[in-house]
Image (cartoon, rainbow, N blue to C red; front, side):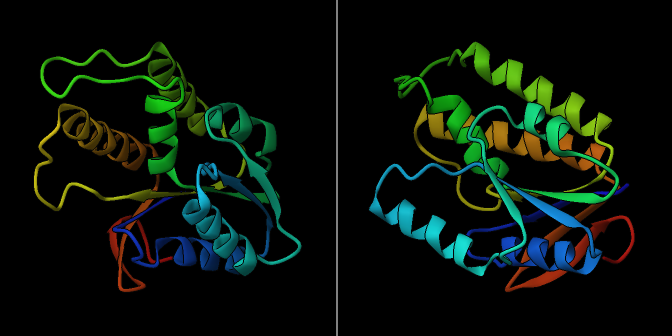
Length: 185
């Protein structure tokens, strides 16, 4: 059983790299997709991802309860791809239509804390291989709005927590992996 975190920027090739890892494993692949098609542009992105997945893979769309789905689908003969943690985090913070102030302290929804804790516990209990895909968003400028700064902070904390739980971590840029932790994939 191996857990791998694949980090990268937008359009860095991180999802394609995670999919190559899954293909190379020879295991049954469960693709946990966190995206929701809120508009036409997002629907096109989702369609692009779906089109390149092999037909034999099982896709499970889950925007919030990732921990529950990891435990439901994990087994030694399977590899689960979670794509992606950044969209999942966004779903947790904005799923109730929460309006956040531009300045000041922000109180995050209880759902955020519940599901984050569930994900960490589930990952520790998974019986099979897991490949987590997440954006590295902390390499750019500090955002101006309070919720944007908080999102960047929480994304960084999430990535750190997942890297600590995973045996391997990689950073993908231009489709090329840089190993941060563990052995070569």
